[in-house]
Structure formats: structure tokens, C-alpha cells
Length: 152
Image (tube, rainbow, N blue to C red):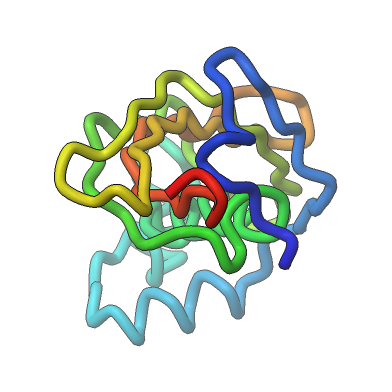
């Protein structure tokens, strides 16, 4: 199991994720179509020529999904009990087809669960970057993490 347990995740820890990915037109098209998001900013090149971007921008939900997925292997694979919610999500810069993304996760806070002795609550801050190291996404997320069996 690659994931970390609640006791392994201390506030202040930062995980710089090794996986990077260049966003393709297929990524954007499939995710947008599967989500039934017909926003022309993601699909219509002619429409986008007259926008502030001058070209299609990548669906922000794909961007968030990718950046959050980066931490799965490093932190939560097999040890998470699920997301409890997001406190904030920001997209300070658009992602364009052809951008190469990478990310990191910081442990912001942690506390024992009041209702589940086998779990703890961890607050994660996820940050995504493009190839110029410009921030393209931030999210603060609360997750329920398994505690080590010997602690329970």
C-alpha cells in the first residue's frame, strides 16, 4: 500500500509529485463531452478567437481532477476513507492545450476524528503549476484518513 496513514501526515509536510502531464486536445474534448459541458470556451476554436484568451482553454474541472489525482499514489492510495469537502478552489490562470502540468500537496492541519476512532481528518492544500511554474490551480480539501491499526 503506497498511501500514508493519518499518523504519517504532519502539518507542514510538502509532497512534490513526480508525475507531469502535457494536456492534449483529447483530454479536454473527452472530459468536457463526458461532463456534458458545452461551453464554447472549451470546444469552439472560432468562438475563442474573439475571447480574451484567443484560443480554447482547458476545462477547469479536468485541471482540478488531474492536480488532485497526482497525490493519490504519494499520499492516499489505500489509506483514504474519502473526501469530506473542499474549503476553496481557485483557478488563477487558464490552462491551454499543450501546457505541461505538475503539482504539490501540503499538509495544512490534522486532527483525530471525533466519531470514528479508526480515522483522522487531514486538511490538504493542493497546488498545480504549468511549465513556467505559474500557479494554475489551488484547492484546500479535507479528507478522512485511516489510522494505523495499532493506534485504534
